[in-house]
Length: 398
Ligand code: NAD
Image 1 (cartoon, rainbow, N blue to C red):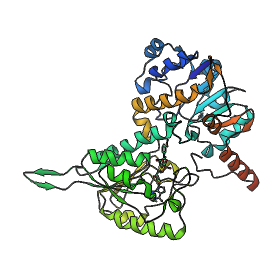
Image 2 (cartoon, rainbow, N blue to C red; image 1 turned 30 degrees about the vertical axis):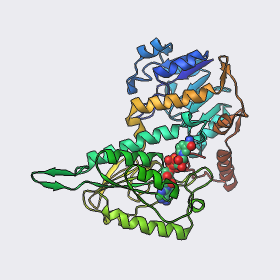
Image 3 (cartoon, protein in one colour; image 1 turned 135 degrees about the horizontal axis):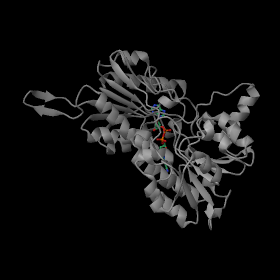
Image 4 (cartoon, rainbow, N blue to C red; image 1 turned 180 degrees about the horizontal axis):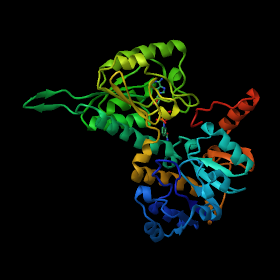
């Protein structure tokens, strides 16, 4: 079997799905690895390193997509494929595609994959189970984004993060409020603490209190039971209107005290919760900074402009949409480990071996043999056709 690693074609994308180090486990499993010329250059992995690791460097995208039995990528197929045509048009019946497909946000693409009978898997649908931990690309990318968000805030802020005692007086440390203490939020808390800031972590899930405190931050959160705040998978649930109002009041009281806010709150299946209103921004101190890591899902702050930096009421608001790509070496290293671990679940004696009894393979599959296998995506597509209008899909994971 031949696996193809294309050069990512999306703007600003510097990661590569398979690094030279990750070629070896694939070849050891009897898989031939094809890598498009310069595929790893954005992450400082050059063609010679792939060749030494045992991969074959292919000179152009058209040959790569044609010769590969399975294409391993980061981004979903985009508009700039071989021959200036959309990448999805290079995929054929029975060919395998593995990437961060975000099927619920890309329903048209899913329809194309169905029509072409492509076997597709989405790395953002990997179950969050102990067995699948080494394949958990969402956690890998959230780790990179949470860390970088704090650095972005520190560079943008007009003040120091740590306390300084100088001959010119004592300078107070920055106060950082991290909203949403999931994987990205906890990494943001740890990074802000390392830089010497005084940190508060806010979340609606009481389960994270201990983790926030173990990082040296103060936990702020409404008094909710685990059942009210989170679902069986441990993700946050949409709150009742009363609970939401109480939680919002608590958060509003903390916002004016923060010099920096890093906000990461998401609820699977829904647009990002709006937690910082324009009025809240107007009550922040001039010179404060917000980094909104939920920008790609509509943003936690009402004034966030996805993909841009803006200044409102003297507050700088960043809405980065692909922050993990700005750390291409380590983000690629983690993703390569995630995707090769996943892919090797489906390889036996160098050939494809799809085991539908394996929950990781089953739950991660989006399309197979002309049908949608991924239940949440199927439901979203059915709901769209029943309504007779395109769905406004905003969800990135089941
Ligand atoms: P996420 O990206 O879905 O959400 C980020 C955070 O936002 C979460 O902590 C969530 O509680 C919070 N949030 C949502 N709505 C909010 C609101 N209105 N106000 C404040 N905060 C709000 O979450 P994630 O980081 O992907 O992970 C979430 C859960 O999954 C955690 O319980 C985590 O421990 C678990 N997880 C498990 C594994 C595993 O077992 N392998 C791996 C990764 C994550």
